[in-house]
Amino acid sequence: DLKALEAELALAMMSLPATKGFEIGSGFAGSRMLGSEHNDEFYMSEDNEVRTRTNRSGGIQGGLANGEDIVIRVAFKPTSTIAQKQKTVTRDGVDTELRAKGRHDACVVPRAVPMVESMVALVLADQMLQHYAQCELLPRGADAIAVDSRVSSQFSKIPAL
Image 1 (tube, rainbow, N blue to C red):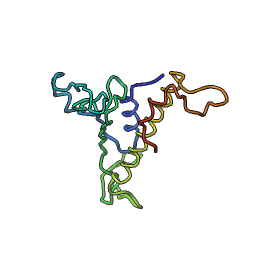
Image 2: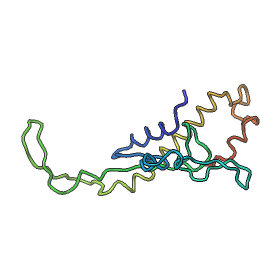
Image 3: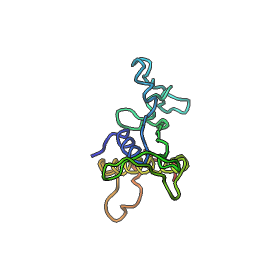
Image 4: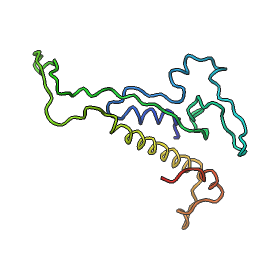
């Protein structure tokens, strides 16, 4: 069951530790636009490819990638485990103060970037495999690993990892 690409990306991003927000394309700013302003007009490029003029949809329309760059933004909360004393409550319900000990990251950004990139790659690979399986695009039999020449052009623009 192939799910909408933006839903799968949102699920993947929001499952990352410390994630508090996700938007795709124009995101929340797009909700303040008129439909006529937000519409991504299609046109034929000089390379004879169907393109959009604005990509406000962030490369995804109707749950499917449209060939434009996929543009997402992920917001992370600041690290709450810090070396300052913080007020808290014990398991017995008694007010107390706590100071974290040990090594804790002061900022999640250095770890966030590779996590986001990896999750996007996993979602895209999963979607591609589901597309192959649903449409029975993989050849069967002894040469099942070989590329099916009937559909290879669909995937020729996918960059090697």
